[in-house]
Length: 385
Figure (cartoon, rainbow, N blue to C red):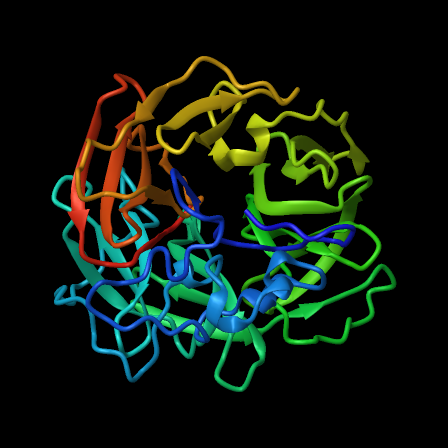
């Protein structure tokens, strides 16, 4: 991971952790059958002082993992189009993912047994993004933040039942509820959704890590709080809708360790901050367990360990480990810091790249600890939910 100090690090979306490789892996998760386009997914969108600012476009890897490609690239998949299922009423929500298919950023469902991808359609006009893709299950839609070809920062939605994509300009408001001028950076990171469908986001304001409620329909993001003492991070956040608590992992700029921060939307107060832990700097979050802990995935280069994360920042007993099989042709294994947990199915998913080339979809049964893997033809970014 690259950090620059002493500056404010904001939304850096796809750090690659690997074993026996340099910290920067050019196109670490690039498609094997389509030439990667380092300029398509914008790491500069991370915000002022982010690690992306320290390197030119051609060397960036943190946003390349979000789906590199350009219209000139050959389409990497032969997945069939399909009539989408109604995700809003499905008993078990499908596993959703996005990938560049040569014509645009496409939305897919993935079969966790075979790795087969079924294309549902494209995000309308999505040109650059950080790979922050979320399922708003009750409303049957996927939500992402990115820019169109003109550089306008938009909120992109894909309505699954109707197979319709829409976008609206993102408008951030300040504490006085006045519009904040946009500089074209993708500086909002989604932590989850409220019961009424607002996305809870975090954004560096220039002085603090602000917390916002973003209406995907209107694009308006209203400030509702801030995290004090929170400066650097790797875009890891979660939201407990039942308790109305936002969680985020901040990175200590001096030690490189992580600390768990929290903020209650119900009381507008910040919770206690955990002690600094080296383990927390390598953790991705996705949602809350029925028992109240956060779903956490910790990368150890491998294995990838899935465990509950307590509010005090301690990791509980592992629910299971994803250990890639030995491969004599593999130089390293890389993970794009995307953990996708499907509570309705009791499964956790992650995409790992063998040598930064061949991708595999790993599925962990959170009850039994059993692990299944399947080859994946797409350079897929999994949706969180």
